[in-house]
Image 1: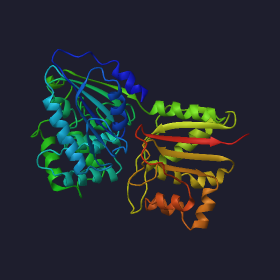
Image 2: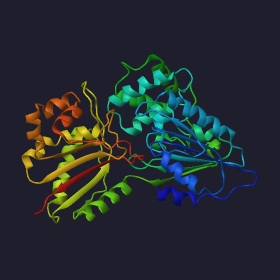
Image 3: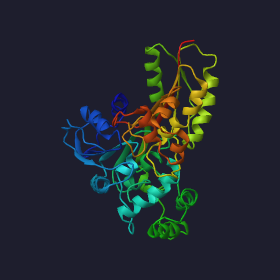
Image 4: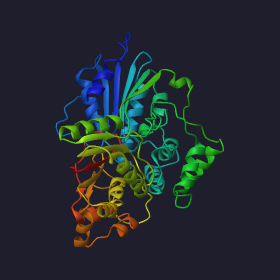
Length: 408
């Protein structure tokens, strides 16, 4: 990961008697730590990696914890405990480096007092399936956590330096991984409002409702905010994100003979609705382009779960365009792919659909409208042969959407 290597070179030199301590957490944690450890600015005293999977060839002298995603597990809780312990042991003259990437919110979880991991899991699932975007979801996560929302950095007596790979729109460091090492701009009121908007109070665990209501009326301390003295020695920067993914896709498309067209505005909103808006924008952008061309966008949509099927936001995005592609005809192909290789609670990264997908669906006996109604995009795309299964990629910078047009 060249961006990590570049960031390492910008670290300050060691202070007298100080030590270098590293916590890498997120879907890209293993790769980020491996790059960092290859050329650290000074020896690493303690290292901790919290990731979804331990690489088969892992050999570095760092503690490795497998956490859970998209929902926290016992491993996530153990990782958070070790992270808080490591941070607290950094001496005032020492330095804690946080290598942060998407997925850290679930992979490192330490519920606040009065909330068990199981209860927090239910609360997060309640808001997530209610269609919450990442900012709203993480407002809830941060206020139910002992490690998120700046609390990890607040527990560290030394200097804290964070390098983050962003998976969120706008690259807000307080949202990436729920911002464990930066000031938190969200409040108890924001967390309560997220619940009210996404899922509602009914179905939320009673313990969580009581805590959110107590926080909203000022009976509980807030997460560390800008100006908090505990974060005075903490700095953070984003070193990579969705734009680098689009640039890579454009380079790959050009190498294959396509004229790349990259649109910067992020793709957001309910997946099935966003797909149709994206389609109109894509057609307009490619109308006068040379052929063949590749239109490339990125972002992160949401899904409001109403049915009982399986799928993910990229899969719903693709299914929502099946009938439109059939009506359009021609050699046009659409892909929507999660850069982490995992789309929702499935083994697919997303899907690639074309004008013939609808016909394959008829043969297979599946229907796009019914699949969307039941949030069952996975079964539909599995039947049509349009799923893309990559396995974990070791990174996470959101989703890529690509439209390919054939020769003129």
